[in-house]
Image (cartoon, rainbow, N blue to C red):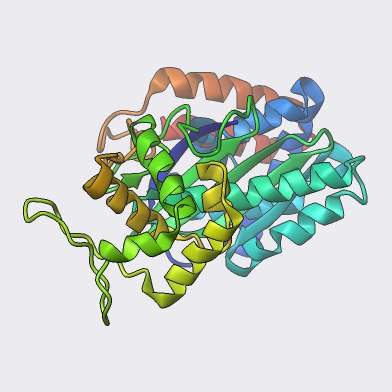
Amino acid sequence: MKKTGTADLPLHGGRAPRWLFNRMVRLSSAITEVIVQEYGQKEFLLRIADPHWFQAFTCVIGFDWHSSGTTTTACGALKMAITPETGIIVAGGKGAASRKTPAEIEKAAEVFPLSTKEIEELKYASRISAKVDNTCIQDSYQLYHHSFFLTEEGEWAVVQQGMNENYARRYHWLSDNVESFVEEPHSGICSDRLEKKTLDMTSRKSEEARKTSVDLVNDNPGHLLQYLREGKQKTLIMPSHHPVLEVDVGRGGFEVLRKAYEIQPQNYEELIALKGIGPKRVRALALVSEIVYGAEPSWKDPARFSFAHGGKDGFPYPVDRKTYDHTINTLQEAVDAARIDQKEKLYAIKRLRDFL
């Protein structure tokens, strides 16, 4: 499994007009059909999981090039456009629709030859990918959109988005060469905006903190009480030179840790997969691991470079032309062969060229 990247996008209000959205669905259907026919279902997932390609795709089908709506609207159009006949199903969506993902994955077994075990694995991949980005990478973005793409072969990709005040950050996942959900699952995280304080428990630098967190739970979380004061507000007792962060696991939180102790998770992935192990508990275990045992987690935002806000006017920097030239060639082949009328085809190609 590779997590291929994120994008920071400004939040824009309003909805895509019906006349535009209907055309987005038609063009999305045509592009998807041609890609699947020419390159296969796996190639389609590879492109959906590539944030550069996805960003260009949203421009081709006619949406604002840099707003948060590129994710929610484009995924909504794809969900309507893609039919089981392509060998692909799109589950989930924005808000309440995201909570229907497990049920929609189960329905896939009615049309795809997927075993009960494969369905459960797909449901787990959907759930754990969301939990990792919302819990293990604490970058202040709260997830509100989760789209899950799966094929008849049991392969999958995820496009999900989180919100932080006036910005949204998009996360892409791909079920290729699955090794670990909790250690360096990304091949690249791209962001225009680096957060000053981000707890990244997926970083290799957090390996000892992950192991120590598991040990703390398996060694009876009651021992944590000596590091967390009882009272209305629980705080960590730390040296004066260390930054004090809010950690309030609460009585309910300790009950969650005690239940985890009874289960005895074997590794960090099993620990964070448990119900109730959310951001506060993960952060508390990480901080105790650092303060008491010196197992320091990574506090660096995992974003490496940015691409989402590049513009043809050079603001905030020029578009990566080489990447976009490749994307244009790929998408133009798809549009040329797609069954859409000439006017829409020329408009789509012109829109992406004008973007450069």
